[in-house]
Length: 219
Ligand code: ADP
Image 1 (spheres, rainbow, N blue to C red):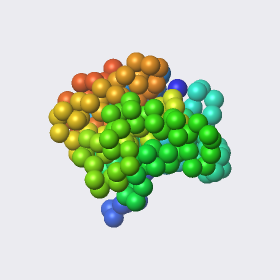
Image 2 (image 1 turned 45 degrees about the vertical axis):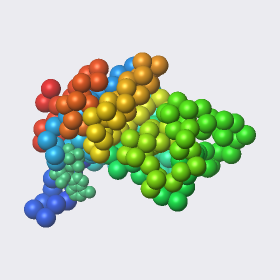
Image 3 (image 1 turned 180 degrees about the vertical axis):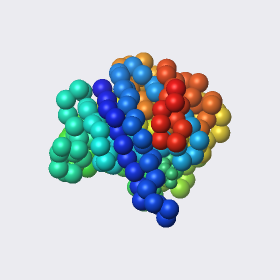
Image 4 (image 1 turned 135 degrees about the vertical axis):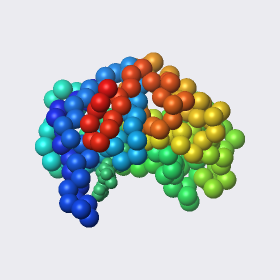
């Protein structure tokens, strides 16, 4: 579904260039929950952003469905390609504070008005057990409810891939397991998840694990 071939990506730091990704190749296939682990600074977020079409590599190739290289498209076209393919979940939730739960879930639909959008949002509200919070603002939610809202938003467009950057980082064990159960059932239904995590507990849900060190996949 997503393939990375020989990706090199450096940043300019105070002491010169830092190679965040130093010739990294990987595949993400349908039905996989792929955990990327490794110490802070080893290149996990850079890998996720590069795979997501949001950070152009210095060299190497990113391919979606074996054919589309997102970096060959204009930023606008790339964003359209991304919104149909990828949903995002972050440690900090990134909900819009002045929108209700239902409105947050509808954010991916803003550019695509459709009479079925409201029904789709309600379906997700029910799937994630948020019926009693539908009209609440993010500031009125527990952290578990916030992340379930973010998951519902990520799934709104029925993406083929979810990219999750430390999605359980702000959650207690019970809520973390609930989020991971949802991601697992999404891959069991044919989706694919790229999970960046420090959490051994979250990584146990993975079907495969990549360990990174100093910009390299070491196992
Ligand atoms: P991780 O997600 O594993 O903590 P990152 O991918 O965020 O690691 O970072 C990998 C390396 O690249 C680190 O040395 C980090 O300091 C550097 N880096 C990441 N983003 C930037 C940036 N925008 N500017 C400069 N250096 C960066």
